Structure formats: structure tokens, C-alpha cells
Length: 186
Image 1: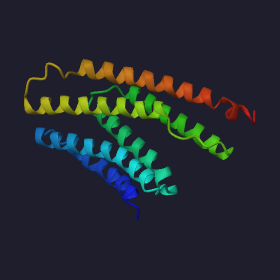
Image 2: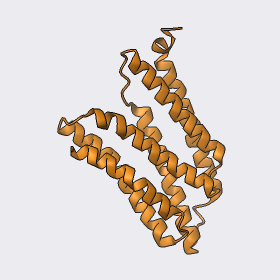
Image 3: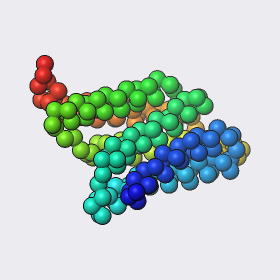
Image 4: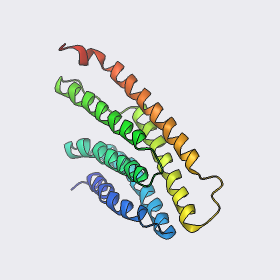
């Protein structure tokens, strides 16, 4: 198995581990969840770099890498909604956005129009990752009884809201870019 695909599988396996740690209500475990999330996000960059550098692009990686990204990010946000840190409606909008973009991508692919990754998807992933890290740090301070003046639920809410609005705007631009393919059968 190619190293880049192993890293994708590692990222997938980290999702339930991070989830378990987030539900622990233990500051030390929350710290570990932060470390594992950083590792997961880093492997996303590294696996793509390795695949390109070693010319090891594969159908497995092309399909599973973005899928695992969605599983990782959406799992974290659903956990945060369950912990009452992020409103469920924000998470559902993120899920809607991912399904919409994936549907457009699949439709275009079925019509022989290849849709690769772009700067909007990469910046969306970065914004989502930053909101997740901030929320994990908030949880760490909450469970360690430390001073969390700079980490609070109001900031989490506005960060998540801003990230969701930008993500939805990106998805509208994405649909606009591919409108000719989308309208070709209508």
C-alpha cells in the first residue's frame, strides 16, 4: 500500500480516537485530542504532497482523501453540537454544503468534466480546522479550571458562524463555476 494512502487511513482511524478524547471531560485527554487533530490535519497535507512528489496518485487516494477530510471535520462539529458548543443548525449547514459540493463534483465527473481541488476548498478546510482547534483549546481550559478569558463560547459561535457563511459563499461560487455542465442536460 502506498504511504500516502496509509496516511489517509491513519487520519480516518484518528477520528474515533479524537471523539473519545473529546467526550472524556478530562483536560489531559483534551490536550491529546488537540495533538491528534493536529496530526490528522498535517497528514492531510503530507499525504497529498507525497502522492504528488512520488507520482503515486491513486483512485483510492483521489476518492478517500476528501471523504476522510469530510468525516474528520463533520465529526468534530457534530461532537461540538452535542456538547452544546456549536449550534446544530450550523453543523447541518456545513453538512448541506459538503453534500452540495460533492453532488456537483460527481455530476460533473459523470459528464466527463474533471473537478479538482481549488483554493476555496483549501481555505475552507483551514478555517474549519482553526475553529476546531480553538474549540478544543476552550474545552481544555474548561476542564482544567484554567483561565479562559480568550476562549469562550461566544467567540466559538461567531467563528463557526463566519466560517459557515464563507463556506456557503464558496459553494455558491463553486456551483457558478460549473453552471454550464450542470445546466447541460436541463
